[in-house]
Image 1 (tube, protein in one colour):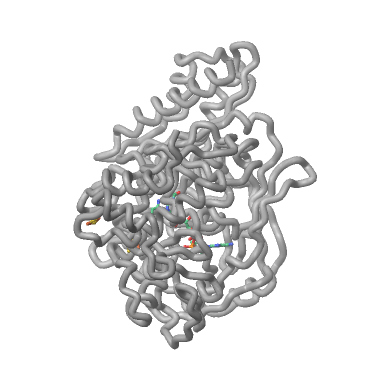
Image 2 (image 1 turned 120 degrees about the vertical axis):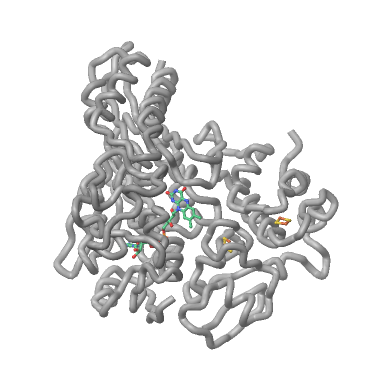
Length: 328
Length: 167
Ligand SMILES: Cc1cc2nc3c(=O)[nH]c(=O)nc-3n(C[C@H](O)[C@H](O)[C@H](O)COP(=O)(O)OP(=O)(O)OC[C@H]3O[C@@H](n4cnc5c(N)ncnc54)[C@H](O)[C@@H]3O)c2cc1C
Ligand code: FES
Ligand code: FES
């Protein structure tokens, strides 16, 4: 690990000031950053501890929920209002990592966590455009069973590893950011980027910019939402494919629907095409399957991950069917 | 840096890069917490911070000043083994014993989470007020602690005896 200085911020202003130092990085629970520093993939010169900033989970005047970036993953998963109004978020968090890691990990750190692509981690053995831009990508032709089927580029086929973020994508969450230039809000689905030719730029967050809070808008459909994760072992493993969904029926028809996929792309993948294909349609397994097909029509398999296309289609169908049965 | 470890205040001069695990093992002679993977994957380094289970290998020590850290060395009370320690012996909850300190700290944290109603991936009804810790719940909640010897049946039996209410 390279040497660094450390300071703890008590207020957002302090954090922003401290972050002006050369090579500064914010530190949440450290479960991703400390690991990457030990591998010398990340080499910050100074750490600004932001775990003392807002961790509040509070109702907004508009009837939604606002969550401070320092809120622990376990605290969010456990919160009464999250469990009842946004069950998909609780479920996604509880499907991620382990009890110990969830007690350490923060909302901000989870959003900013980096890919688990083995070539990204293999500092001295492989090429990776995220680690060393322009170097090439050894995953594209390598062992890419875990890699992307949607939105990838020749420069990068890595996936975003977060479960929580798939739920935030389906909930139409909004991120509040703050930098020395002021505050701004970004819709969660626009926060992470597709790799294109600059896979090292993973989000629209600017250097020194801080995630303050995430806001979940009030939305009755969110009450009927869930998350399903398919993985190589039944617990404590990253997703091969995951599905976050919310469904509202009117009679036997789909009145409204939200769908997002994890484990398939460089960002949490909101499935707008599938949603479009479903609105107003009969809530039948055939229609669910057809909607999945509409979303996956552009999916491009790599050498070892073609199975993800069928797996995603089946998981989407099963999750929507589960929600439809609950609604009836 | 100043710490509170197993009820004792300690002051040590350590490099900023020191993890909580290395602080315990290399500077404070507390060798109970184990270094299995040093990357968050095995749970052997689990300790309690203000009663919450965490991984000391991914924790920078500097961040844990002012928190009350409890390691396996601080679990026993008045020289009496913790009931869970005794149950591990009775149920053969270990073979080589390497994962055991992490398993025991993790299980104590886990039981407190369940007691206050924290759901898990296995919990059907997220709205439920109370959690019934059955064997499936215990296995899911303890999945962050790997046992290379595969002593899982004994581990689950020991935890169940102490924490699972008879149904
Ligand atoms: C063994 C293991 C298994 C895991 N399994 C899963 C899994 O199954 N599913 C899953 O979703 N995740 C999994 N994770 C990842 C885990 O969820 C992340 O490591 C965690 O959420 C990161 O949060 P943190 O607070 O520890 O972040 P840190 O490591 O502290 O920081 C991560 C990044 O976020 C930045 N950051 C932190 N806070 C802010 C802020 N307020 N504003 C701007 N930037 C900020 C930091 O600068 C850093 O770049 C696993 C991790 C491990 C080690
Ligand atoms: S040593 Fe900490 S999780 Fe393995
Ligand atoms: S008893 Fe040997 S690793 Fe668990």
